[in-house]
Image (tube, rainbow, N blue to C red; front, side):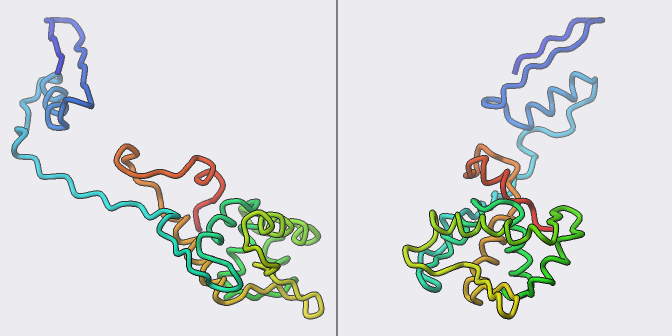
Length: 195
């Protein structure tokens, strides 16, 4: 730790975060302001063990339905446009089924993700585009549209998988980036926190 005090001059502290301990840094700051250091290095409690942050690698690769896996659902959420992600979240909240009119009404006046009534269908094309790139090799759909009944529908097992993906995506990042695994910045930017 490098510190030099000259009468009548300012104090400059240099704290090397790689070699100096937290206790040494606090003691240096206290001494610089004329305080008697309150604790010695041995009297500080041990820092709690940081819990590891779950990541997509913790998701199961087991097939849920028609080739869809938890990881595919997570990757789909990470790749669709924000409006489509918000609609999927709403459908999951409603148990996987909702009327066209109900979804349109909900998003028409939504405070954070407003989607005009005549644009909901176009917003959902993002899901189909991503499905071709990320989804299973068969022709199964994540989101079914029943135009006769005017209903959006997600298979219940896929709705449960989407809920797990949203739960994982909603885990806040930890404070210590050096000791924790991180995702690439695109994921953190693309999936908003759950309200």
